[in-house]
Length: 326
Image (cartoon, rainbow, N blue to C red; front, side):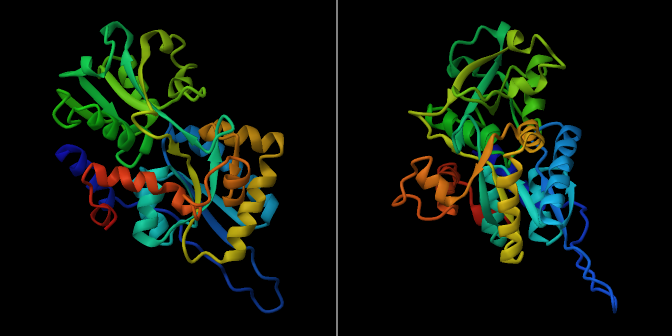
């Protein structure tokens, strides 16, 4: 796991330039200026696409809460973690591993879990060039492989654990390993022949990263095939994405954002915006996780505990979480 460990440890060293949170004091005789919040979206897909949808959500939140909300897309998952922990970002839409890292580093708090296909979890998949003729993971020995972002669960951590549990070393199994940076870039790298295979989000419930580039490459599903799903019985499904907060954000602000998001996804503009962003269909808090989605309260005592399988996967790969988030 040397190469995976080296790349993952680089997560801690990245920074991002983002606006500082400001709460200007009112002048004498003036009403208090609205609270200003910076909301960051991880660049798991094309940055311009993420920013466009994220800005729409920020506008909807601004109307719902009367807070001044700014959307930003840092350069990487790691940069998003750094910005939240440094207090330059207040709300972060984290992928699961990114949330676990931010929680370990500075106590980031999960407020909502996203729902896709009416489920609060999702899967990962191994994609391959259709003309390669590969029938199973074993056929990728000596091939070129693309992971996504090092801090992505479905395009890095989960497939690496899956490959290891299948009896192969992710660092030695392939002739070349690259980190493309996002799910759509992994798909494009395979489509264009830069690599032979790669890992993205995707599952039997209908989630598929190839859908994100189908307008640009209409024949992508003919040229890029699903080789294997990364899921049961070899791997559990992945706890879904989060909307998370910096630890010291006032409790009433967190609650206002959570309530507003529940209200926003009941509207057509809100529903369209969150689906276009990361294919979210809705959100769940702890109560819904237990009462609607059947999560075992004894096994998952808090919303944060829902992400313990990710912490276990980190240990299986021999990664030191404390070093990852320094």
